[in-house]
Image 1 (cartoon, rainbow, N blue to C red):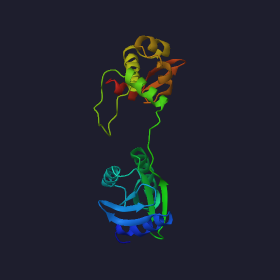
Image 2 (image 1 turned 90 degrees about the horizontal axis):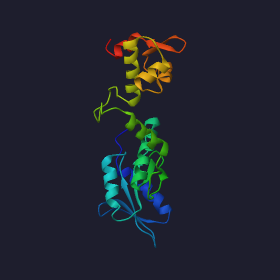
Image 3 (image 1 turned 135 degrees about the vertical axis):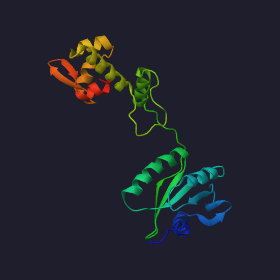
Image 4 (image 1 turned 90 degrees about the vertical axis):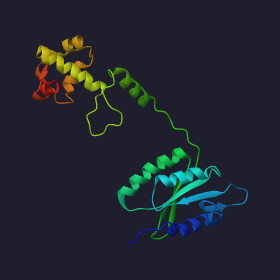
Length: 218
């Protein structure tokens, strides 16, 4: 299959809009497509073979002319395109843009999103988790923008405190670890053993694994 051209999107989109009662013209001013219908604001469509940042830049710029701005892209094959479509629909929705998808094999046009003003819904549980993690984390142990590194979370800091106590005092009861370290969830954390650091040596008593000793530099 040869390289797709943006011009291949024009006729299917033009035909679709004409079917909605619009008069359609190409390359009017800086816009790829302008469609007008009596009594309504113009509709502007920007064409690209796929989603790009420049496509969204162009579309946002057209919003100074009309609220009815769409981006149109060619439909790609497989799950990769569907994942890209899902992510870019979220972006378009937040920008107040519409999205048109063209299946070039038969010229089929679908509109998964129309332009509309957007006010993101706030998630109280996510906000609470964020603030809880912020307040519980000691200091600022990470570097912003880090990737492929183990981040130090408040949970990890609590686990380290428990491991350090066990390293110093030997196998201990969960309640004693909680009291000594101030980690109220110590027993639950050691039982869950998320990092593979803890082992149950007796009922209610936990010690360190070899990995746990390594975590505290033992």
